[in-house]
Image 1 (cartoon, rainbow, N blue to C red):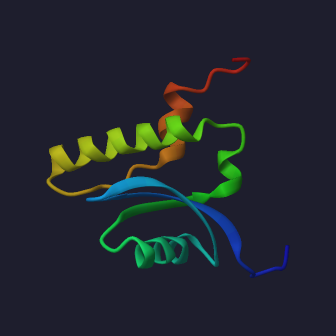
Image 2 (image 1 turned 120 degrees about the vertical axis):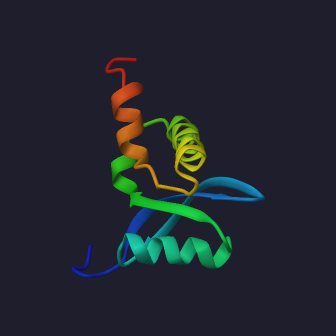
Image 3 (image 1 turned 60 degrees about the horizontal axis):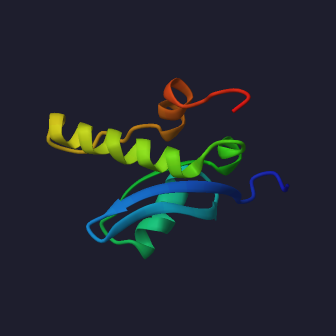
Length: 97
């Protein structure tokens, strides 16, 4: 990989029309979020390095992220973006199956 070049990010996003994980190449996490928000206007989004998702259940990550986002919006009146990686590592990682 070139130093200072784009790297892959997984961007968790939620809009009024849907949600998902978009894989993008960007210079940093903020740039990755900007890319997804350009395609999904008004999206609440959180980027993590794509490599950090290796070996993890992406559907579970997305589900847990959506649950945490919903709870944060209900309790604080606005989104406090949860880190999708910390949600699963504490509750759903089960070595060996």
